[in-house]
Length: 346
Length: 278
Image (cartoon, rainbow over all chains, first blue to last red; front, side, top):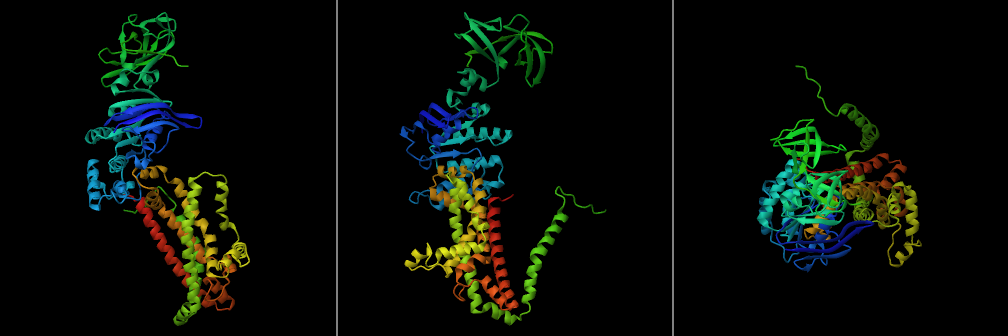
């Protein structure tokens, strides 16, 4: 099932939750909506699900207008951050719910329902919990049950709203892997919302980065990390060193100091973005920047150092391999291997 | 080895348990025991005669039967009121919310007189009803009405906080799974509220069984027609037949206790099912 979203606007009072959003999701894709809170990602997901309606714009599934249908008629599986399991029903009944509420004409027989629920519980590897109640399960188990329940109606689209947001780090990591594998198995078009970049980059085929109700960039995980389209994406995804620079006559200046790097077409007050591991360390005077090592920590294969840049003493944090050990007090130079310059926003 | 006293993170069990028992004894158990002691003045056959006389049986039937019916009506009406108060925002909502409590605060005699005036054959509501052939005041229907009036806040106030806490996501989940509005209400919302609904029902029922003040004004108090058990007790007292009065009271007490105990068990069962601990 393909999903197409066109010119969606959604406003809550004076707050623009979604500002002219366009998005196409290909059949069988696993897409992540990534952004800080208030970026509109959950609003977009709820509009696709039919739990909210946009002020204007279109949503279509396989070219068919979805906005004329309510949530119950869209055949969408929705997984909530806080599971939203029915706590008065056993795990089995929770999963069976979507099958039991079908109109009598199309409802499966009791035996078929039992078989289907069993199959789904096997799929999420929790068949041994069938007779428990939600309050007796751990968070990770609850979310897997919520997923099995959403899949019971054989949804055309699976939507997950911060599915791992309420879980602790270790379980979250396991479930990420598991969701990835599950998607490869069932291949239903899926969109999940997250504010955790690691989660988005690790799980999704494509990542949609959102901020302030707008889409900043759509691309593969590698793409959004290596080629951020905007300053926001660069600073939101991965760790960045950000330096205010001024560009005139093609020359990039930090304060009054020329940096000897290519401006790439930018003019006026701008921001220089460099990944922490993209700073080449060299002897003083041989790089674009000079500085003094203030503090060094080591994490496995890398060393992380705070460098005070000469001139205005700005502190930057860099990651370097451990083959050239740094010690506090060393005077060094830094040369950005890869960098991007974006015009400074007001 | 000396047995060290068991340490607990919550000290003060002895003190609080002692206070609880003393308090319960002074206020509830000792007066109730007096009831049984007084009743013991009657021989067994006298006791059976008293409580199985037509008039007594009828009064008990009226009290318990109408209280049950009134609690049922309150259950439905209360749920609808709670739903409106919790789920919708409308002008005057806080005012309506406050009005629900009036039956709690109003002196029951005032309520009884007001209802009687309203539903008497020449009253604002009584007159049109009378022209339809429906008599309310001075009939069991009037008793039922008074019981509905005094019971409504119990259902509203017990269910309201639970519905406020009920996550809207639960309903959204049901809708996404294809449930109709009706299915969502009957299969998801009502079952989630069941423990609170049962508690509210039990309270409304208990209050209606024991209600005296508002009922006697509207009941007409005809023996074997519209006489409630509490009134019969008062009549026996005024005739100085104290043991007869306590005998009826004992029956009311035991039946009420059994019903409320049962409702409590039911409520506990519904609750543990919802919040089962592993």
